[in-house]
Image 1 (cartoon, rainbow, N blue to C red):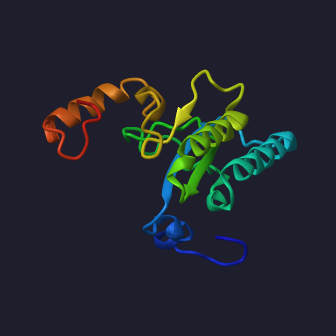
Image 2: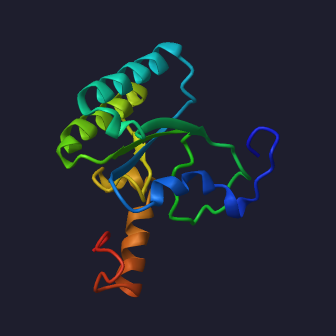
Image 3: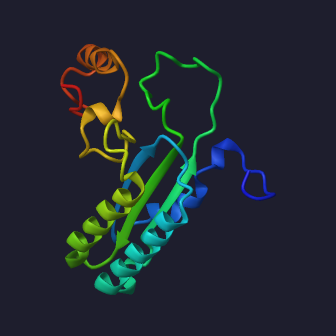
Length: 170
């Protein structure tokens, strides 16, 4: 539900459709937090970092954004055998870069790193990252939990030993 408008689960990510259009350079990274960020100073720092990005890269990078989503807790123990191991995450911080000038890549990446650092500062130990958007982070941060990597590696070797879909876990 967004505001007073009900949105079916099939359309919950429709607001992300503009990001999927052809053109420009885009990158999406996500980090999990053990609690919802409530300190106004952190959000003020995010605004300042974004303004610095626009000062350096110009209006062509103005579609870049930082957002967060909190995690509702479902049924305890549901899907315990799932590959999704982020049960300790209370909120996700997302940093999305979207720019058109290829020369802005380093500036955009620096901003993205800073945007995540602002919110994750103090949580480096055991920081979790979302598996389908943060491929540069350690695999343990994307698939946390005892025995999870071993199980996923065994499944990968059984069902996709040549790495047709991805070489992760090979």
